Image 1 (spheres, helix red, strand yellow):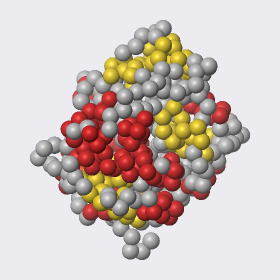
Image 2 (cartoon, one colour):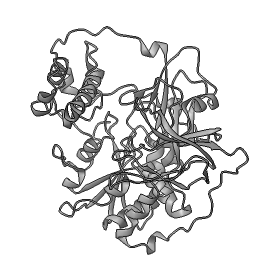
Image 3 (cartoon, rainbow, N blue to C red):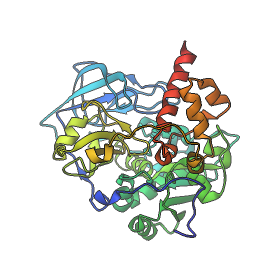
Image 4 (spheres, rainbow, N blue to C red):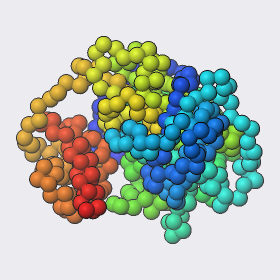
Length: 441
């Protein structure tokens, strides 16, 4: 690892990627029903365009974006709308969702669509086509991609930075995307470069994926100004600010976007799905998702339609092992624990982690000993110990004004290294929720 680019601080949790890294992606069978929340992205929820009784085909628009920072939702399977109702969401709330009874006799082939040649689409219209396809960032945040491709006029972008790090333990879906769809990744890069009016791109990949590094280097088009940059294996190397710092040496100021330092970050899976839009006309209706952990019988990488319920995914993966204890959407560092098997797969779902009982041992929370390990781990140089103390005291406003809570990306590094087992990251999440409640009251 010596000599590889990286950032300061961070942690080195066990990777556990060997469970699925060598398993090629396969398509999960279509379920009997898909449930599509109107809120699957950062920003305003989509607005439904259908009603109960409507028949829809795979890829049809069923909800339109209701603002600039919003994203369309498409039918992920052909079938009949049964209802639009509140449904359990992976975020822990109940949200309006469209339920579709999947047609058991459908081939699930999307209807023919007019596909514009991306080379002939004006730069300013490419982002509109991407918006119509409901493309959002697939690295976890699910930020609408068309918004990213329209940076502020006073902050021009000069470098497109592709995130192939996948630093979260256990997850391997981006790894498989680079191995299985490198041509799509490069086509997505071409389209994004044209939309931004720039020519240079860099793909950052952690050094624990030598096969992906080799694949992307061997398939790189000669006429494309793209660099494959191996990076040190360290969490959270794939976070936007950390990736920019490692590759360019630039620091994104607090509260600013990457465009402030002339950079735009896009996930490799996002790029591949942008390519799909202009190759086949298929909108964002499915993705490769890692199903892994010692609590699942058949771990692997699966192409899963959005809206597939968690219970259906588990059933098709052989069910749970006897010692399965917890199910997490995402990875162990930033993922969300699930309490309901009816929650659906979302655009932002990159992995499903089933942890065993031994991996979820309850540890007693002890008083802070002010050892400073959380300060040494924080990649953006905050003071987690101070924020934790303020959170426990209910002094939420001071967490923002004095401790810069809004700059925290909830990466979990502080919780991971804390010898007292203080759930710092969870305290910060709770504090943000309380601040929203205070603002609304």
